[in-house]
Every structure is written in structure tokens, then in C-alpha cells.
Amino acid sequence: MFNGRKIIAVCVAKAFDMNSFEYICELNKSAVEKGFSLFVYQPNTDLDHGDRNDIGEKYVFDLMDFDKIDGVVIFSEIIKDNALSDALAEKARKHNKPVIAVERFVEGCINVKYDYKDCFEKIVRHIIVDHKLTKVNFIAGFEGNDFSEERLNVYKKVLEEQGIPYDPERVGYGNFWEDPTREVMAKFLAEGKELPEAIICSNDTMAMTACKCLYEKGYSVPEDVLISGFDGIDEERYHTPRLTTCRSSKSQMASLIVQLIEDQMQGKEVPDEAVVSFEMVISQSCGCVDRKAIDATTVLADMQVRLNWYQTCSLSMTGILAQISSKRNPQLIIENLHGNEVFYNVYCCINTDALNPKSGLIESDNAKPFTDEMLMVYRGNWQEPSQRVIKFDRKDIAPEYEKYIDMNNPIVFTCIHYLDVPIGYLCINYSLFLRVYERIPQIAEAFGTGFGNVRMYTAMERLYTHDTLTELYNRRGFYQLIASRFETAQNNPELSMAIVSADLDGLKYINDNFGHSEGDNAIKVVAMALEYAAVEGEICSRFGGDEFVVAGIVQNENTYADEFKSRVDEYIERYNSVSGRPYKVETSIGIVCFKPQGTTIDEMIKQSDNLMYADKASHKEVRSRVRYD
Image (tube, rainbow, N blue to C red; front, side, top):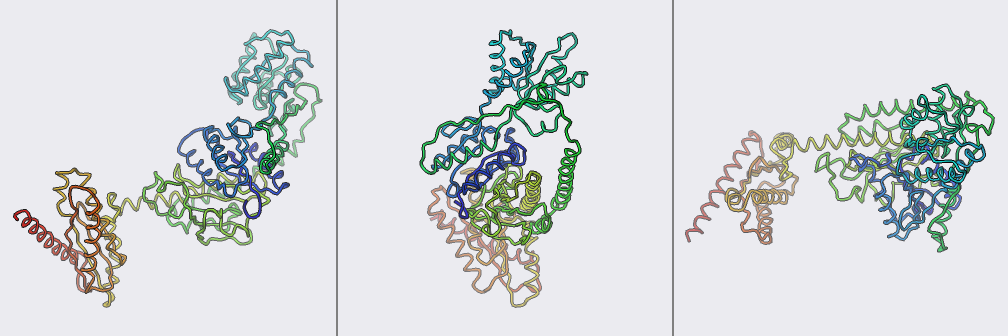
């Protein structure tokens, strides 16, 4: 439950696609009627490539919080990653949540599907039996696809019942798409071949393509050849002639899904499988309904509105992307987004460490894709947009949600990522209009590009200024940072400056006797000891090899050197006592601490170096005496 409402989690791909969007609309209608709200978790691809971008998109499902979710719906046919659907179902079951899989069977779920076979058989019987035809061709989908082969078997069955021999030459695989269908039609309409009386197609896209191919050859539908489709897609509404086809009842499917979830929550017995019927629609392409002209003015006006909206949004997004692509400061990105209506009703939430990467651009810094605490860096709202950066608990979804989120509209989650590196997520609370849902991938790309570039610039700068072995500043980074502090100390007679030179003792001995990996380990121990000792915000750096420099403005120049060295010794002694390694880590240190008027940074470093070398010489003398004794 969230914000006083029971929650149904909807796992679907491409919420802006017409098919997915219609499901969301119908589910939301049925859910709200029964006191539920929808959390929609959606990648902006259908996850059929398995590349780094798909990996980044899949992180959205890691946002699912089963403490708030009361039931789960997985559109397992729309999401093309079967293993992902199976894993989501398993996770929901482990949390004892009702879980429903739509169309593709998923083990352990309540599986709901359409009765494709029954309705397709009605179509085939209508063409072959009702129209009394014998020369009927068939365009299947993908060879070996379950839906495609099921429909081909129905075609064969009806032919057999009518005593019509099955002819493989009358069958082709159009792969549910236009170009392969054109190849099949070229075979059907090849010179010298008898024109079929009808062509039965496994979906509407192939049926409309078959019509085009016939028109291009000078034939008419249905006067010369009857055509039928299947699945009732939105584009069919604008086709002339309208297709004889079958349509699914998404409203019936949505109502059934919500009812099944509610029944299971109430402990009622529910079936393992449920079936929703398809409706056969007899229309113009088989000649049973008179051809009527489509109201072209209305269709074109509707298309023009959508096109204008899309162009406006695209131009806006292009401008925003151009502005934010070069921004190295996240605040500048946020300022570019502020006031742009494309981003209204959008929360942008990023990981707390997203802008300070350690591993660089190509790797994630965390074991989990999202941090437990998040930063809301942007909230678009008509009445009260916000550019405040607000830290919040990720379990709260978004800060001040009770004030700005409308629970009667779906809450859509999508991942902000750069390739396969997660940066955060968007929480979107749009009204149910397709044209605004079509913004989602562009908005996600804008945030991903903007903050991805900030991450890239940060990572590149870190590589430029940091030592990769110890993660301390390198010589270049040290000099970039120390100059301003040194100038501050020089201009204020009350401030003191400290310079620490440190060197690992016996590095060659460790490398020669135990290997260079152990030498690297000893160097890292000294680095950690120096960081442990630097309690006054000093800059810790590795100048190269086993040489280190620490510098900063300090409070008490009289006691600083002894206190710093004591903390270093404490850390190293503690490490040596528990390391179990066949050598001890030891270091030599030289520290100068005074008011820096009349000197330079390099002169102070030289003085601390001299003290460090003196310390190293005394260590060698002690070791020699020990060996002699």
C-alpha cells in the first residue's frame, strides 16, 4: 500500500507504444474502480537485444518495493526477455504477492491469455466455408513461432475438413512484418501463377501489406482477392478497405486481471489459467460489408495534431540536449530543465554518489543499482516546480509525494542510465494521453545524457588528478588544489601551513622477495595511514613510486607534527599486528609546519623531504644495529 491506496505493479515494455499504452489505460480504469493504483515499471526498449543499453533499461525493475506492492502483472509477451519475466514472477511469489502473467506462460503465475485459436478459426471458416472458396493462400508469421504455427495448423485443419488439399506453395512466412510479407506476395503474384481467391494473414500488418501489393499489381480488394487479418491494430482504422479481422478486448482483460488480484488478496480460490475471448469483426476486405470512404479530413486533422505535438517536443528536446550535453555542473543541467513544460509531472531522482564516480564511466560504483538514499534534483509541477536538491529515503518513491502525486493516474518508473551504468530513475505521473507518454524515452535520454556527461567529466577529471593505485591525489591534482590554500595562508599571518613528506621503507626488499603485488599493497597501506592521520582536511597525494606528500592549513603548528606522526604510527602498527604478511610496513616521515610568508610550496616540500630522508637514514641505522646484534 502507498499513500492510502493498494498498489498493482505493472511490468511492461515501452509504455508509450500503442499496445502497451492501451493496456495501461484499461488497467488503470479497472484498478481505480476497485481502490487500487498502478505503479508502472517500464524500460524504453522491449529488451530483445541484450546489449548494454538493455541492461541499463532493466534496472527499473530493481525499484520494485514489495512492501508497498499488493499484486504484480507481468506482460510477459511484450517484454521480450523471458528470463527476466520468470525472475520477476519468482521474486513476487517469494514475497507472497499475487502475480499474473499476460499471454506468455510463466511458471507459478496465474496465466491469462486470449483465445487466439478459437477466433482465428472463425476467420478461416468465414473465408473458406462461408465464402465457399478453395484457392486460399496463407501468410504465416515467423516459422517455428507458437502463435504462427498455431494459426497455420488451424488453416490446415479447416482445409482438411472441407476436403481441400493442402498446398505448401500457397503458404509463406511474412514474419509478422512488411518487408518479408512483400517477398511472400511476390511469390504469390509471380508471372504465370494463378491468382488466389483469398489470402488469410496471421496479423493485420501483413494483411495491409498484402493489400498494397495487390494494388501495385493492378488488383482490387475484395473485388479480385479477399483479404483477412488478425489482431485489430490501431492503424487498421485508417485502412481502405477496412479489414475483416479479430480484436482483443483489452478492457475485458484488464477487468479480469484486477479481479483476479483482488480475489487472491481476499483468499478466494483462483484458477491457474484464464482465457479472454477475441471478437471477430467482419468488414470490407472480404466483401461482406460495403466499402465506405474514411473521413479523411478527421483522420488527417488527428494525425496533424499528433505530428505537430511530436515535432514541438522533438525540437524542444533537441535544444535541451544541446544545452545540457556540455554542462559539467549538475546545477546548470537543472536550471536548463526548469520551466520547460516537457518535464512537468516528472521527478528526477539520482543516486547520492552518481555525481562523484570512483570507477569511471564504464562501471557502476555500487553493488546495487540504486542507493538507499536518493537525491531529488528536479521536480516539474505546474503550480510549484522545484530545483531544490532534496535527500530522501528511496522507499518513499519521491519526496513530498502526498502533495504532488495523483493516485488516480499511473505512477510510471523508468531508469536514468548511461549505457549499463545506473544513475537514478524518473518518477512520472502523467495524465493518460498517448502524446504525453510518447515523451518518456526522450525525457529519460535527456537526463541520462546530461548526468551521464557529468559523470564522464567527473571520471575523466578524477583520472587526470588522482592516483589509480591509492586513489589519493597525484602530483598534478596536488598542485591544483594546494595553490589556493597556500595563498590563503600566505595572506593571513595567523594561519600555519604544514607539509608532510612520507616514504615507504624497504619497497625494493618487499618487491624482490614477495612480488610487486605485495609492494603495491604496502604502498596502499601507507596511503591509508596518511588519510587516517589527516584529520584537518589536508590534501593527501602520491607523488610517484613510494613517495607521498600531505599538505594543508592547520590549527596548531607546535603540536601538529607529533600528533600527525603518532596517528600514522598507530594505523601502521595496528595493520602489522593483524596483516599476517611476512613483512612489516614501515614508513619514514618528515614534517614542516610554520607560517609560510616569504617561502614557496616547493621550498617547504624540500624542507620536509630533508627531514624525511633523515628519518629514513635513522631507520636504516636502527635496522643495521638489530642485524649486527
